[in-house]
Length: 326
Image 1 (cartoon, rainbow, N blue to C red):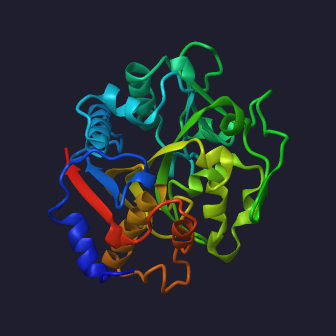
Image 2: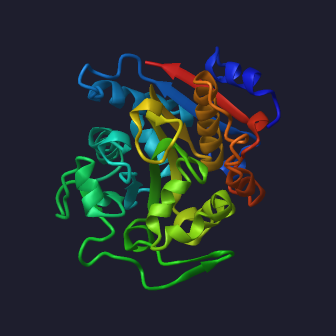
């Protein structure tokens, strides 16, 4: 992995040397930038997260990543005007380890206020049942931010098969037809097969047959699904939800191996963001006396595959990290 893990993690979570700078699309950068925002005292005694702190974390994450002072300028720096924006959340883990409604709606409301009307924003995932179980109130109406699953009547999967490398899938009509830009707001967690599931693997929830893509630690499938036109051409930003991280026995929720980190991770480069998420999981595993993912033969090799495919940077030596605490 380049530098020794102990030294690497010390650099990640010690004093950052990254200066705030304006970043652009990953293909224009020699190095990729990832921003980690930590919310101090973000959890209440009832295990709820503070909405004001979440909003501040989004603001700091986006302004630090883009180098813009105002949220409006942040969004317009990477989202074209009059875009229809999809926010792909992750609710497969139930309330214990899913994108919380207030976390997702905070981002959606900020987009609505600073980029365009809320009628152009869709919060979505695979099924309406999973959305409801995670606490979401569905909304199919023209007014307000839309919230619904691919299994909604009249939505479903686009009938055109996307065949690419080892991938042959039908894509959710939301991802394929209803949006022009996509944000992956993914839960960061351990995965029994892939090693790590984060921003890139979140898009497995956009295809009709994700079960086909879990052999050989999901490599090369995570990279190849992301490389398809419905995703690669629309993806604009990865945000990893590390408020609570499932660092072992994922992707389902097990409180014994879940840690309240209170962080959000931001990156234009989906590979770099997920690579930093991987290192955070390794840090937690080491702290708890667990073997590394490599020792368990489930290192997320798909990240290196994605780098070779030109999707982003997995090489830790080429990723700059800025950490801010609020």
